[in-house]
Length: 208
Image (tube, rainbow, N blue to C red; front, side, top):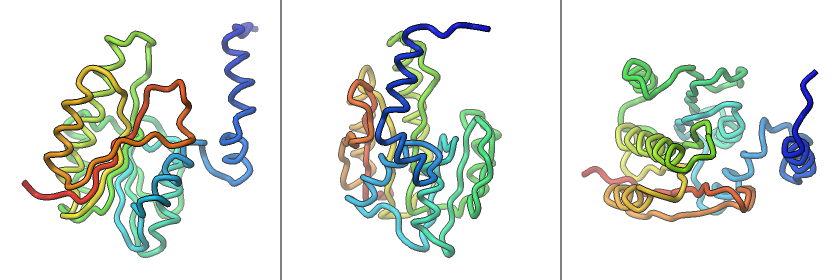
């Protein structure tokens, strides 16, 4: 049997002692990440009854789970991820790598063009711990999410995109500001303080 390292043991102890992990388990959410979205949604009113939401990098599904509750029976949540995701009632899920053109087009085909209210992206690459490798990968995913938002959002729609600060970050923010009337950088309480992740909240999409 493989013995866990001390760092793995520390991570597991910290993980299960995390109040957000404990709360997610007790409330039936698929991961602690739900509380990042919940905080920002309560503050900014991103998700509304009857809305249409696209969730990129959705697995294991906590954001889609929350979004479906918020948009209700008359709303739609379309989710996609390279990883499998157990079925969620009322959520349309497509597994595939939307960096591939064929998958990208399949995702677009599920959406009413120019009618999506909110694009969510909690996507992140598998981190190697080497910044010169991880940062370009994370920026590429953020740029894909922003490009997808530009294709599917209706005028006035919003996007919430995870991004890591580093090379390319300022250019990414500048690109978002050219397409949205309001852009904020936010770090929810549930985002671990040591994590370099931050969320770009882009509101009031405008056609250019």
